[in-house]
Image (cartoon, rainbow, N blue to C red; front, top):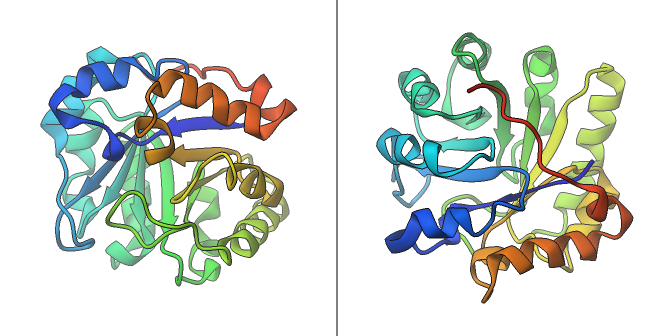
Length: 229
């Protein structure tokens, strides 16, 4: 099943609750956390996640683009995250950090920047529920999709198949109606889309348009249950 995860990075933060409500027909809500150090931008923290939690029934897919994520895992889990994704490049002790996410009671995600070799996650596949392949350099929304990412997605899918584990492959960056079918064909099953959804006149319709662009698999996608109350 293909899941669509609108990224609030491209939403209007002055009416954030309304923007979140407008994509209730999606499968996940993608929340980008940036600290101005790991990436050249600053967004939001645990208080905003906590405020959004009662405003949506969608699982909150919280993407930590921050240095030393170990220091904030518990805070974001307690705020209401359902999935916490940390970057390979952001921590010295990846195994320890991923175990901390699991111990916090949420699903575990691991992310790689476009130039980070996939081999960096081979030895932690037994710990993760989702692999996030960045298809742009992180930090800002609205960037152009890096076409070489398609090969990386395919190799990540092959890696997951060899592991025998049920691991989602998420893609983030430049996802729109034209690129979405390409990444799904390559092996992705969770699509983060920001500008393509929140930049549209109707975010709800944009979600459905993205499903239609995916063909039969996109049409079959439905909301997924939350991981925890």
